[in-house]
Length: 144
View 1 (cartoon, rainbow, N blue to C red):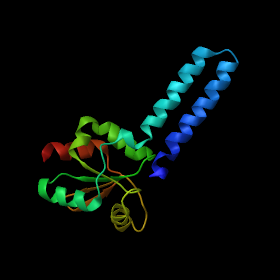
View 2 (tube, rainbow, N blue to C red):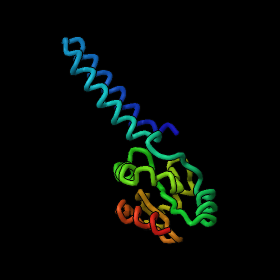
View 3 (cartoon, helix red, strand yellow):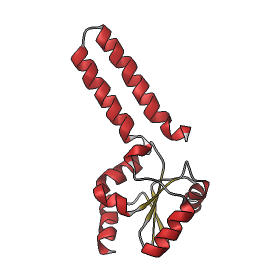
View 4 (cartoon, one colour):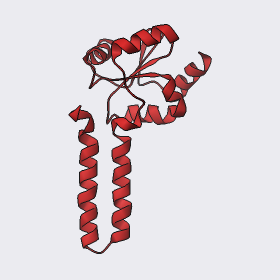
């Protein structure tokens, strides 16, 4: 769990430190803008930017019942964030598995990617797709 919050924490601390230095130099406006930028980056790289994760076994069970894809992801992954943002509200229709919190999810990703934990890996109809184009995935969601 700590690993998922490492980057966001580092971003918040770095932004706060630099902003404090700017305030001491008398640049209050720039310090506030800089701090807000770093807080935005921290929020986007945190697990809060993603729908609630479930375990891989639960995701597989739910996917078998409703036919929705499973997305294996990890916090701090820019490709996962890109997929999440480009899917918009449609992201809630998917089953999200954080591979850093679920060893079974990490094993599934390694099995699909020749031993590598390459994310995002989307499993649709039993077939893994590594780092799929968000437009393609949106189209798959519309057709299902």
